[in-house]
Amino acid sequence: MFRAYFDARKNKRNTINQLVFEKCLESNIFELVNEVLKYQYIPKSSICFIVNNPVKREIFAADFRDRVIHHFIYNYISPVFEKTFINDSYSCRLGKGTHYGIKRIDHFIRSCSQNYTKDCYILKLDIRGYFMAMNKKLLFQKAKQELIKQKNKLSFDLPLVLYLIEKTIFNDPTKNCIVKGQKSNWQHLPTDKSLFHAKRNCGLPIGNLTSQLFGNVYLNEFDHWVKKELGIKYYGRYVDDFVLIHENKGYLKFLIPILSNFLHSTLKLDLHPRKIYLQHYTKGVKYLGAMIKPHRIYLGNRTKGNFYNTLQQYNQIIARRTPDKDDIQAFQSSMNSYLGIAKHYKTRKIRKKLIFQHMDNRCWQYVYLLNYDKFVIKPKSRNAVNYVG
Image (cartoon, rainbow, N blue to C red; front, side):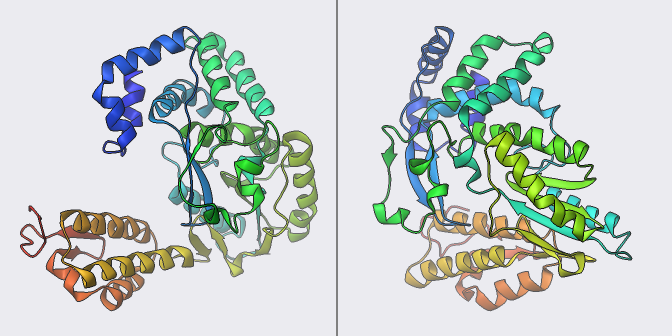
């Protein structure tokens, strides 16, 4: 449980809930352990709010003690399920992620087209309201069956962990939640993107570590079915966004209703009817924030737009007042995050244009740019209020 706590507090060290928990750390940990051992653990209220970037989403942030439990569960069962996943499931897995997924899809296109010398086609599909549509009973059954199947290889108390999994999956975060923001924030959010409109015994909260893992568990059967039963060699999935690549366009078109039927009948999920993309590889494909085209990968327009908008936000700050230490560090973190994404692709000209044409010149008093890859805070920025180099 202590290990789970240290994992949970990463990047959350200064949040109020974490500080309150840390204030009486040992007593809180032992209290949590006793609740778990006595099968008396009850999740607390979540905080619900809306985020607008990169897209409008409803987030339920669990109480910090519940985050500790999520990490506790994850640390035990993730290695078990990791062995069952296909290589080309990219979300929430060590050594995978968006960059790996983009490189794999690029590799698939090159392999299927024999290095761009033959025809091949890309089918990209999306599941409608995936996290809100997951059936909790079916999910728990899948998780339970796999863990029982592996019980002779497990080094932990299986009934206890299954109890926590059940408590986490069937917890309804909409009950007694603390809503932050105004009701108007939920305007224009599709009902299939909100837990408040989810079907009974359906839906997992976006934002929980366990939700990301269970998202892979839920579609694991589908992944293996596509690879083995349909024989699709070039297939990859990130959460609910998946791509199939084949030399025959007609065959991919033929597969769409078959894929839809399997998802609906077996997993109670539906394909998004407006997110079906089927094109020749020369047209390129937008995937995981990048535009994959023959011989090159571009940064997606949404990411470029967010980069520009963030620059403008800090331009407004520096135009109104002298930035303090927190402003400068926040600027550095935000810019380096975007530069870290951008440097994976052919974006040197874009980075140069965004920074030197759209960044307020007064920013150079506090930072300098290193190889167009990252911003470094100047050691003695005397003009920054309360800044200590």
